Length: 313
Image (cartoon, rainbow, N blue to C red; front, side, top):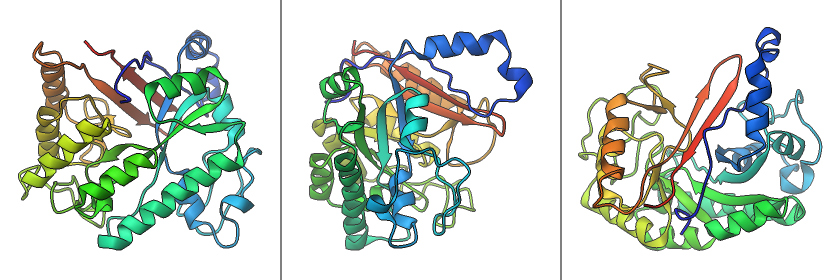
């Protein structure tokens, strides 16, 4: 179970700050505070970047021990590498969720196969840099690995379509190191509603599945049993509400922004009433756990990560 004995405090990470802001006294305070806590990055797309690189680079051909800032690559959408070991170390990352993303336009058995291939990328990357990364399976493992000076690594499945409506697939992903699953990506699986359509263009106001189907509730129940976090980024607002009320363990928003601060109709925003529902539910004494929430806020001038974890009641 990873929803136990995990502690962190609100954190501000700042990159590429305007020079006048960088000289502000709060920056030194933020950096000093930054060094006192265990930083968890809730979502990193490096495995998909490696998947999209023009052959024959791959895991073996990509050297993560050097800073790749400013370099361009053929294949990936953004053409640049946002992650390497020097920047992970400089950012104080002690715990990384590697996204094992597969596009929701790839359904069925192929989505399961591609998920396994993405998990394989993570395992091979950890094997290539054993002095930097180590696979963690539980909160105690995270603490041990972090204390050893290495980066604790877990996988995050970014879309319920990747299990192909199979609880057995879910269990096998868990066995291989997946410790959260985002219930939907764009377009959604047959058992949950997403925030946008497959093209990531149209914001979906309707939720034809009612947020979650009966099988959707079974998925959450099995994730709770395994100790796998329910991730609500990308999902429809109604899916958020239903999942929060259904889950008996903390839920996360692995890469989302607060709509109160970023008022756009986009799949990564969390509305005010969702925050209220979450707060009300997780502090109810009939439930065992409090909230586990990760919120990312991005602007052109800075990248800010607020991570908030509460101990079990």
